[in-house]
Each structure stands twice: as structure tokens, then as C-alpha cells.
Amino acid sequence: MTRVFTAGGAFALTTVLLAQGPTNASTGGAHAGDPTPAPTPSPAPTATATATATATATPDPAVSPAPSPSAPAHAAVPVGTRVRTFSYGQHPRQRMDVWWNSTGPRRPAVFIIHGGWWSSGDKRSLTSISQSYVRLGYTVVNMNYRLSGDAPWPAQRTDALSVIRTVRRHAALFNTDPDRYVLVGFSAGGHIATALGTYGDGLPGLRGVVGISPVVSPLVSYEDGSDPLADTAVRKLRRSALLLAGGCTPGRCSRAWSSMEVAFHASPGDAPVLTFHSDDEFVPPYQSEILRQELLAVGVPMTIMTMPGTRHSSALYREPGVAETVQAWIASRLNR
Image 1 (cartoon, rainbow, N blue to C red):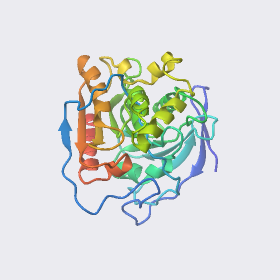
Image 2: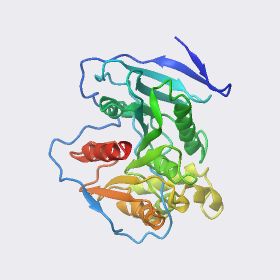
Image 3: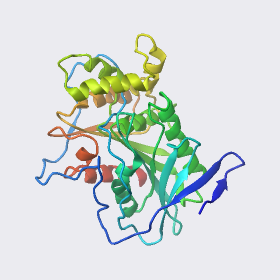
């Protein structure tokens, strides 16, 4: 079935897939690239307020190992929840999965942004995490976007902005509150989420941004990866940041790299931020500290949480206590 909705004669929002309804599963299952938690408990997350490295550049993109696309899990969601995949543009990657409930008061929204080195990955890897927010009562939007091989920056930010604007424009259809939403980005998706957080002087209705292992500074990543003794992932992150910039180095294309740097665009109207890192992952906590310093300077709160170990992106999110901390922070932002 295909249905077309138009808003003000502008552009069509087309249903391209009808997803299956609820089943008896309660966890949503695991996906390739969306690992399950380790069986041994981990220490509780701790807040950090000081940088531990001498970063010399600027703020942030997020990158993550490329998850393998997988079929959506069939997790139990509340009775009456509708699930559809919509196109928000003409490119095959410009698709978003939306879960909403058409009854009751309008609900705040959670937008989910996957990682994958900006060059790979798929929203399907975060289906179970998306469904966990559906069960908490939110409207949930899990998006794909053009990858760096499709178009260089700022195409990824532009696509995410289009998703937000589309959902807000169709807020009545989705029974959602257009002025109460948060962004949750994983790795490369964390870069996109935080870049939206400092876009302009704040996006209308945006109440908070969460980054899980966000690569907060492509410039720092580019410099860190120049060390021949650097970890393989660190060197790959350098190459990925270069590809995001269209293959042009910072020295030749300073404007493009400046646009990718989240902290360069901090302003008083930006949304509060929460980020999570592992102490020893290849996207170090000091990348978030760069952004934190700039946001605090303009009066915007930011919290950096750390966990022991090397887990990254959704693997870090599934560590004991992390998801619960993120969910509590989101609730505190959306209940205001």
C-alpha cells in the first residue's frame, strides 16, 4: 500500500513500507552491528569534567564501525502503535522509520541516528533500541541519511534536518509535540546529532542531544590518525573524516572542515548535551571535552559520562547502566 501526504503543496511524504505489528518478543533481539551487553557487570558510569589530552584542534564528528544491515526485529510495542517507513527525499537512503500512537495526548519524540564511519551503516541496526523508546511512550524516528560516498558534508546534516522538519510539519499525523524532541546519535551519528545541536542558534523544539561515542572533532581525528603508530581504528577514522570532507584536506578546504567542527558553532540557544564514551575507546572522551568547553562558555550545559573499557557506540550503550542513564536524562529534558 502506498499513501501520499502533502504539506502546503511542498513535498510528498510517501509511505514505502508497512512494517509488521507487535509480537511477543520483549527485547527486540540482537542485530549485526548492534551487539548485546557483556555478561559480566560493569561499573556504574561516572561523570567527567576535565580533558585528559592536549587536543589542539576543534570539536566533533562521530564515527562507528560499520554495522551490517539486518531485518527489523519484531519487539513488543504498546497496543495501538503504528509503524511505517517513509521517504523524506528522492535518494534511496532518504528513508525514516516512524513509530507513533494516534490516540491520547501528543507525545514528545526521540530521533535516532546510526553510525558507521559516515560511509556505511543502516537504521535497521538500531531497531531494537528504537523500540525501547517506543515502549517508554515516545514517538520514535529512526533515520537513514546519505553516506559520505553518496555526498560529502553537509549532506548528512542536511538530511537529518529534513527528517526533523518533515516530522514537525506532520506533527498532527504522528500525534507528536513538535516542540518537544531529542536527538540520540551513535558514533558517526553522534557527530551528526551534536552538529544539529549547534546548528544556527538552536533548532526549534529541540530539548537535548545525546551522543554515544560521538566523534566530536573531525579535525582532532584527522590529526590523531596521522601517527603511524596509532591504532588501526584511529587511522581509519582519519580516512573517514577525509572522505566526509570530499577527500579534501583541512589545509585546502578549511571552510568544509570548519563546518564539520561542532564546537566552532556553539551559541547560547543550543540544546543541552549528554555524551558517553569508554575510557579507552578509539573515540576518546577528550573529543567531547572540546565541545563542553565551548558550550559552557556560552551558558549551555553539557555532561560527559565515561565507562571503563573500550566498548564503542551501541556496544557501549548496552553496558549496564548506560541506557538507563540516557533514558533518565531524556525524560528530564522532555518533561519540562
